[in-house]
Length: 397
Image 1 (cartoon, rainbow, N blue to C red):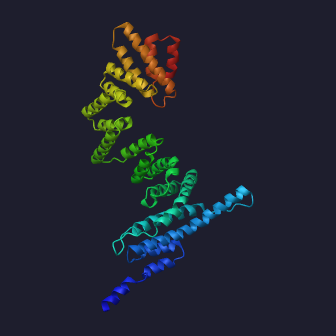
Image 2 (cartoon, helix red, strand yellow; image 1 turned 180 degrees about the vertical axis):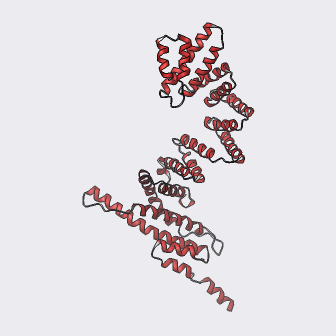
C-alpha cells in the first residue's frame, strides 16, 4: 500500500517550483532569465517553459502586427491617421519567438516517461510563427538602408535558419522560393564581412539552390573558403572539397578554375597539366581550361603554343578582354621571332584584331592594360608614321 501511495504521488506530481515561476512571468525577459537559471525536472517541463517564452514573445508580435494591419486598413479606406509601431521591437520579438519555438520543439519531440513521443506544441507554434517570419526580410532591408550590418545579419539569419528547421517542415515554402536565394546570398556576404565563416558558408549554400543566384553565390563561397585558409592542412582540405564538387559538377569551369589555382599556388605543374588535359579530353571547348593552357605556355615563353590555346579560348568566349590581350601578346612575340615577312605581317594583323577587341571590351583598362602592346602591334605592322599607329600611341600612355 505504501508503494502504491508513492507511485501515485509521483504520477500526479505537479509542476516544479521553477516551472511555476516561469509560467507566472509577465515578460519575455523575466521568463528567459528564470529559465536560464532554473533546473527543470524533465523534458516535458522544458518544452512547456520554452512554449511560455513563445507565448510572451508573440504578445509583442501580435501587438505590433495588429498596428500594422490597422495602418494598412486606414490607408486603404482613408479613415484615420496611421500609428507608429516598434519596428525593431517586432523583429526582435519574432527572433525570440523563433528561437524559443525551436528549443520547445526539441524537447517536445523527446520520448515521455512511457517512451512515447507525443508533441503538444509543434503544430500551434509552426502555424503562428510561419506567417510573421517575412517581417524579418523587410526589416532587414530597412537595416541595410541604414547600414546596420549586425541587425541585417541577425534578422535575415533568423529568417534563413528557421526556414530549414524541422519545426516548419510541413509549412508552405513555395512562396519563399522567389526571394530566399537573394536573401541568403546577401546574408552570406554580411556573415563573411563579420568574419563568421560558418554562417557565410551555410547561407551561400542556401543561395546556391536558387538557379539565378547559384553562380554568384558559388563564386563568393569559393572566395570565402579561400580567404579563410591559414595552414597547409586548410589548403589540402579546401582542395579536397573542390575535388568533391568537381566530381559532382565536372562541367563547372569555376570549380575547375579553383582547383587549378590551388595547384598553381602549390607550384605543382604536373598536377596543373594533368587536370587541364583530362578536362579538355572530355570538354574540348572549356573556356577556363583553354585559357589556362594558354597561360601555362605563355609563362614558359612558348608564344606559338600560347597563341594556339588562346585562339581556342577566344573562340569559346570572345568577350574577355584579358584573354584577348594575352592572345595579342603571344602573337606579337611570335611575329617578332619569324623572318618570314608575310607571316610576320599576318601575325601582327591578327594581334591588332585581338587588341582592338580588348580595347572595345575594356576601354578604360580596368581589367588589363592592353595599351602599349597594342601600339607595338600597330607600329610593327604599319610603321611609326601611319595615322592608325599614331592613334594607338595615344592609348599607350
